[in-house]
Amino acid sequence: MHRPRNRPVRVVARLGLALAAAIGLIVLFLALLVVTDGAWSGFAAWVTAVGSGTVATLLLTRRRSWPQRFTRLLPVLLAAALAGSVCVPTVPTQRRPPADLPFVATERWDLATGSRVAVYHYPPAPASVRRPTPLVYLHGGPIRAISLIDHRFLKLLADKGYDVYAYEQAGGGRSDLLPIREYTIDRLVRDLDAFLDRLGKGPADVLGFSAGAVVLTRAMADPQAAARLHRAVIAEPGPMDGPTAAIGGQTGRPSARGLAPAPTGPRSTHVPRYAVALGLMRLGLLSPDTALIGQAEGDNAFRAADLGGDTASAYCARDAHRIPAEDTAETFSFSPAASLRIQQTVKDSPAITAPLGLARTPAMLMIAECSSQVRAWETAVLAAVPTIRRTQYLPGVGHRMWNGLDDNNERAGAVITAFLEDRPAPLPDYPKPADIPAFLGDHR
Image (cartoon, rainbow, N blue to C red):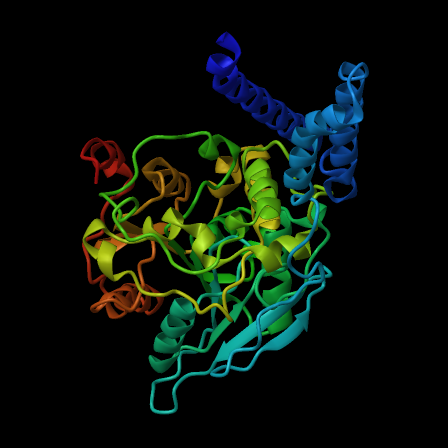
């Protein structure tokens, strides 16, 4: 009489144990992925986890009939299928860079460092007054394609008479990959020096944005690279060295992170293989050169929607529902492994405040009102570089200061060109080094 009444309980209990067994094997698989660093595309962890689960199940059920033993193996088979999906590529494992842009020629330059980079040139507009010094743009990321938003801004600067050059960092966009261990912040500085040498037009004005601003700041501290700089525009810099990277604290005024609609389109994080690989890399549990996925495969898998809140954080809260598309699916490219590797080398680098104190390059710092950068990173640059002649705090914009909204491109362009042409600044020179404590205290 009691057996029928307890049967549902026993069924639920058995299902619970089966589910727990499957989850336990998946956790074991993930742990083995970390221990083996994804060896053999994850199959080393898969064989070990599935083999251990199979042997353990067969030993525990050795006194049962084969149909019962097979039933007990079902959780192992389920875990094997789920874990196996992490080991099988779903995108090409050979690099597929984005196609060349239709509105500007893509050149490939071989630099003395060994890097082969994609280069773009926007000559001065015919009707403009030609500026004598070339202007070189260092994009953010690091290690991504130059966005369409950036290309439109570079064209605006060319229309004002500037001879504009830009290149995508090695491994980013249409530039060739490097071995993963060669991605360092010092390599990016050497590439800038080699690019300016190859350009062969004497000292150049350089505009560095975000991660590009970090490269530019560090170039100012390197005597060889600094000799090729005419003027430097440091726009929304990240941390310049290890001690600065260790600083946390406030950012700018509220950004659109958490307010903007979720980005649409495909995501690599919807595929188990790339969700696991990129997630463990971001947590520091897998190295950027993990054997689980190759650099090229990770580049091919990563999509614009994977950036999620990072894109929204580059805009002011009031712009949350009108964030422009920065790229198309065909032009977007980002190298997550190489980017993480670059960021780690910044965190591991010693302080550069002493050589920056000897810098001679005239510079300007640009700070956005709704910046998602830690304010102490930006003010550390201001305090360390004695040749910053002016600081321009841009109201009404986020980290992505030139974004095509309203007159933001024109306002950013006016700030940059006024400095490069040594004309009066369109905005107050604020904050100055003496203003840093109040600037931080006011949560500006």
